[in-house]
Length: 208
Image (cartoon, rainbow, N blue to C red; front, side):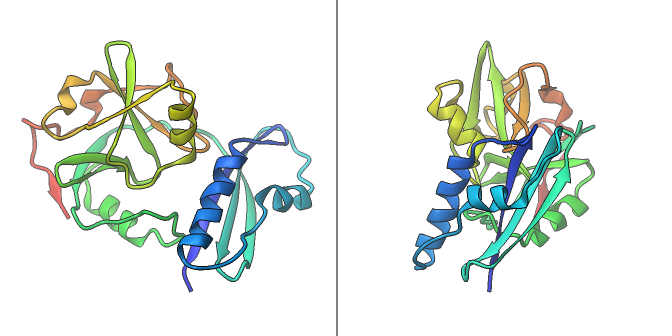
């Protein structure tokens, strides 16, 4: 049976974006024709976590409502370089625990992290959604692989906008940043666009 994963930010004993995580879990159960769900807030409460600091609460669950948890200390990584990787068949509509294909793409690349390109459109990295800066405005690709909770929250708050970002227009953006449930929208933690080592007009893309 497929297993799914939620990674929830816990900082100083407080959970973040839990309602978005719960909505995604509920949608996963409903999509696969299962009634009910698991209660993420209750799972966290039962852990009786009493440590301050930043943690990732990792919950792996299946459609029989079996789950296991890990509370992992977390630090936001700084990444040396990125590579555009073309894969037109990859699908990650649900947050599956199985990341073999993502890891395979990373292993074949020449960079620390990958940006997955699907049908010439920018999607996500191997573990995050993306934001791109043009002028003073931040945009997120409309062609995401997974509609992450941080992405949903920022769009709802109108802090970012959704747009089509492709191989043809990516160089119109000056900087980018990675967002997920643990990596917040942070205008001070951004990368210049040339951190992508194979922008159009430079090296060949990786076609996987």
